[in-house]
Amino acid sequence: MNNKLLILNLGVDSENTSLAFTQKWINDISLNFASVDVLTMKVGSKYQLNKNVNLFFINDQNTKYTKIYQLRKLNKITKKLIKNNDYTHCFAHMAPMQHVVAKFYLMQKNIKTTLWFTHSGPKFGIKWLILWFSSLLANNIVTASKHSFPFRFKKVKCIGHGITFENFFNERKTFQLKNISILSRVSKSKNIENTLDNFIKCKNFENINIDVIGGTLNSDDEGHLNELLIKYKNFKNINFLGKQPHAKLPELLKKYDVNINNAQKGFFDKAVLETCAAGIINFYRSEDFDFLYSKNLQKILKFDENNLYTKIDQLNSFDQDEILRNIEIAQKQSKSHSISNVVKKLIDIFNE
View 1: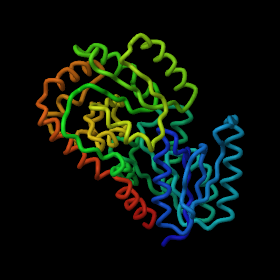
View 2 (view 1 turned 90 degrees about the vertical axis):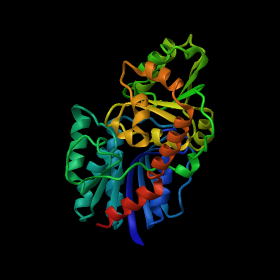
View 3 (view 1 turned 180 degrees about the vertical axis):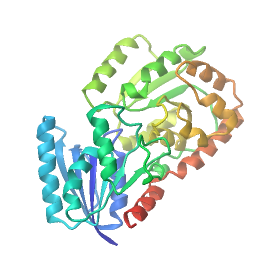
View 4 (view 1 turned 30 degrees about the horizontal axis):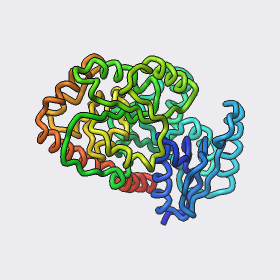
């Protein structure tokens, strides 16, 4: 068993729809180490970590520090942890800024780092620069798919997403389009407004219910959510369910027939894989999800910003047996993205 690992991440909170999965990552990774220290930017009110995991945090659910204060606190805790511990490796999960801060101290002790980043990334500005610099400093870079990392480096490895397939799996024996989910953080980058605008153009939309499942992460997201609530307040079949505990998602998803993922290339959302495991058909834009379905069904399920409503209408008239066969195919494919497979690949990379 390896000695000690340092993990840097954005949050530890089992109640957060978007971040709760990191708890499972941490616990499964920790089984391969004698001890794990986790330095997170924010900790929630509920979490359960293995006994060999020590948690350090910058913010809790009740604090809102300035960015300058957070950076100073991050530097202070990072410096102390690395000075007082002999880590064998450092894993930065969606945390390029934390990685840059830590790398300065880690290099002094010749400790290698692996950066996980799965997103199309910032297009410009300080966040782009931080991610680019963090990528240069990393010994290894891992991501979910070939389009989910914005820079081209030879050290980038695609290892898939880590989902709890067994929790989400649901055998589906019939299919009828009645309930649609949008399992997603509420953010402009997720194109939820475009999805809903297309939805209300469907021929049969009054007989279909659509629920947005997910909360916000920052003030920009909150502002966007308020705009959506105002715009669609008169549609009784459009609902915003807000943030849902990740542990309750498998049961909640059993009522849905279709999920719509409107993220463009570069967003390899694990929500698509989780809903596939749950026996839900996915409409999607990113070609990275082509592997989930047969070519015949891909023609219907893959859409652009202008034709989603026609695709939904087409699915209503598609052969039901073929849909059920494709649901089984998608479930088998999503199983290859289980957390156990991803953790095994990560450990191999840590040991290189």
